[in-house]
Image 1 (spheres, rainbow, N blue to C red):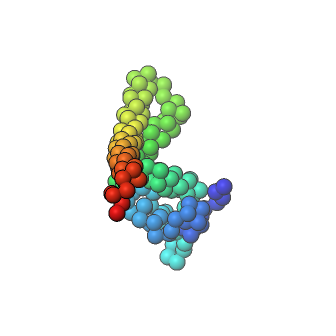
Image 2 (tube, rainbow, N blue to C red):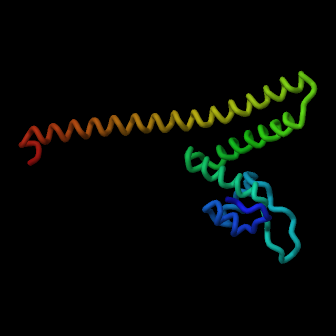
Image 3 (cartoon, helix red, strand yellow):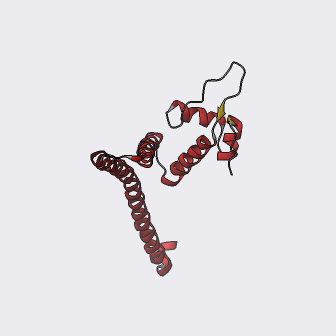
Length: 152
C-alpha cells in the first residue's frame, strides 16, 4: 500500500521495484509528470498517485513487451481518457458535448486496443513459428529413433 504523504524518489523506486534513474528517465520521456519545483538542496518528492502511475506503466511495459514509444502512446491515451472521465463526472450538461466526450474516449480506447492487438498478433506469430519448429524437431527425433543408421 502506498503512503498518503509526499514520497522521495527512493521511496517511489522501492515501492515500484525500479530505480531513481528509471523514474527520472520516465519523467524526461513525458511518461510521468516532471517532479515539482524544489528548493535548492531539497529532495525531489512525488505524490502517491505518481507511484501508482509508474507501477502501472512498468506493469504494462513488462506484460506487453512494448517499446517506450508504444508505452508513451498507451499512457497518452489513458491520460486523455482520465481527463474526459473527470470532465464527465464533473457534470457535462450539453448533450452535444456528452456525445463528443464519449466519441473522444472511444477513439482513445481504439488506439489502446490497436496497440495491444498488434502485440498479441506478434506473440501469436512467434508462437506459431515455435510450434512449427518443435514439430519439425520432434519428427527428426522420431526418424533418428526409428533408424539406427541415422544415429551413427
